[in-house]
Amino acid sequence: MSSNQANTISKSYVVTEYDLNDSTQPHHSELLNLIPANKKPLGYLDSHSSSNLLFDDKELSSNSKKDLISVSEPIFTKTYKQKKIIVLQKWEGIVQELLSNSFIARLTDKDNDTEEEAEILLDEIDPNDTELLEPGAIFYWSIGYDDEASRKRFSMIKFRRLPTWNKEELEFIKRNSTNVRNAIGWE
Amino acid sequence: MEKITPEIDVKTIVLRGNFNPQLYQPAWFAFNNLLHKDVIETAKGLNINSVLTQFSFEEFQVQVTEDRFAVGVESALYSEPLRDLVLGTFMLLHHTPIEMIGINRQVHFHLEKEEQLSKILNHFAPKSEWKDVLDEASFESIVFRGNRKDKYEGFIRVAVTPSPKYKPGLFIDINDHYNLIDRTEKIVTADKALNVLKSAWDASHKMTESIIYSIYSKRT
Image (cartoon, rainbow over all chains, first blue to last red; front, top):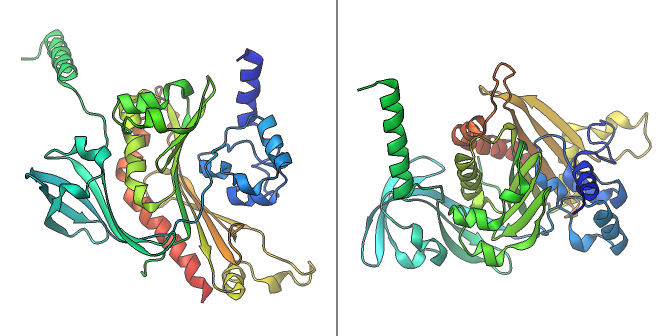
């Protein structure tokens, strides 16, 4: 990409054709569908939701799409469609103990902060998350209805993904802290 | 408070500061175990260059430019994983200068009758007030902005409009905005944004629930 191109894209992101700070203009996302594509904002100037940039691809005419592409605006291209999920209950859990085909967890109800213990079958876990299953791991468990096509009950467990330190990194941190402690002269 | 479920419920976290978009690509998230390694192969809408990275994976949408980091999810089910993704990212990159954070929620309700929408909108902006100055005044949008009640600087902005997705429908857009800059500090890092996510997340969610409920309940 040439530097000119880069500048154009960068600039287009922070400059709006449709001034978002002008109080006479609508300045939130979903109204964008009511505004001609060539007058749509190219970005928000504050920490407002990025979903203001969520254009429904199907709702835009091909000319509108051309307008959008021509300004190289960064947009989320995924279309948000109706996918009504009714969450009946939500817990945050901590894995206590692993068993052969289940695990014991301490659950906190997200609505009323009550705690309980439960045994959960390993089959309930998303295969992508099995690598995260270990004592101390945190997970979120939701049950409810999925009304996308016809009503279905669902149960979903998602394990928390946060950075973990590996053995080498822990050794490095330990060495560094020892060096710092020695340099300061602490016992 | 009765539980209400919108047809569309989008939650996003937007950070404003200085970012290197090329860093935030699927492989980086996978390498650091913040997203499952499948993201490398299955991320959709992938676009990576020096000024923009964006992709979607499972329920997540990620978009990073030089001054903005935004991640969104479509379902309340992924609310905590959304927070964790941003937390994990900036726990690793905690020297990133972040000046503002917005925890945002956008919901669409499909209403049963047009009168329900009129009731809600009339509550905030009675049409009768306009009859002498505008012919057939109709409601397009109204935006409220209030001060924060917690220890943080910033504001809460709420926009209410008819939903462009549903007829009749209601759209509510909430921006829970935090200003993180303290002019007396010489170094700006990601720490304050991380603190907001750790300490204010649940309160922010409860606040948006209560705002949405309060507006939606005006339909009857």
